[in-house]
Length: 386
Ligand SMILES: Nc1ncnc2c1ncn2[C@@H]1O[C@H](COP(=O)(O)OP(=O)(O)OP(=O)(O)O)[C@@H](O)[C@H]1O
Ligand SMILES: NCC(=O)N[C@@H]1O[C@H](COP(=O)([O-])[O-])[C@@H](O)[C@H]1O
Ligand SMILES: [Mg+2]
Image (cartoon, rainbow, N blue to C red):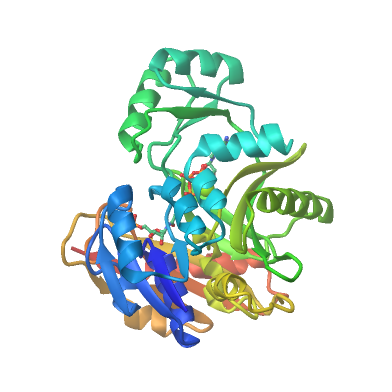
């Protein structure tokens, strides 16, 4: 089968490797040359994926069987057309289109499906944001409707923050829409990603929940399994099933939840492998999240997902701009037991750009905090130089 991968970062690279291993053809697309997945794909294209005509050209040229989005910033409206042409858009044109825009997915989850979410409003001007803040109360979180990895996201604690939050969100917005969502701050005890695998002819399966910690809206460490109550787990699974069913198609979704004293809140979801799911690269499961995504897409039956180990991942970020990033400390991390790492091979760095990840695993009985601590210490051994 021929797969057109739209987005070629670290997640796409691992997906491509999984696909290559079982003889699939991958054409990797991104906005810059030598992106991680391009380094391991059969062929590549460099285009602006928000440009519908450029997308049409690439689709017409390669005639893929599958289109697999790897990022959100894509002219996803075109996907409905590709579906009509007989191409399978993963997981579905609707899933990719709805999750690209926080408004579409939030209204679907909250209004249509009745899932519990933070109270929220939308705003297209600083004045509307002021009204939104009054409605949801402070503290609250502001995010551009189109952004990811925490870009343009900030927390409003006092009146004085409103104007700043508006400007920051508009600057951090990636699409052509100048609109933000303002959400009540959820005082969560922890947050999880529930990797949910929707299969074409078989039941939906759930991975063991993944816990994670975020800074600046971007993940720093993730671990599996997250220790949560059965009640919270069933609530999360039920919500994940409802939202993935409404979006349609087959594939792996990363469904994000906040766990609070008054139950589970739905946050958002990725209709594709999730960054926090990189912990599965530590060998925590019989199949990692990329293999699961691939199998579900190809309609290869997945009999079960088993938790084989406890694991943790910790990110390794760049601190400076560079067009030739290099790495030190690899021999140190390599010397550690039960430890592995990935260097993504990004051709350039900028402050806070995720360049690599440390992976640690241990027996399922090991206290998960210990595994996380080891992953953090391992990550500190690698330095990105400019
Ligand atoms: N309403 C909220 N209350 C409390 N914390 C929040 C809220 N919204 C977001 N956060 C924090 O910010 C993080 C990032 O938010 P969110 O997942 O919405 O951003 P994102 O830009 O879509 O990130 P990604 O694309 O990496 O998933 C959350 O995981 C959580 O830690
Ligand atoms: N939270 C979404 C996420 O983790 N996406 C992953 O990061 C890449 C972009 O990285 P970059 O900004 O360093 O190019 C994306 O291509 C994807 O692999
Ligand atoms: Mg998120």
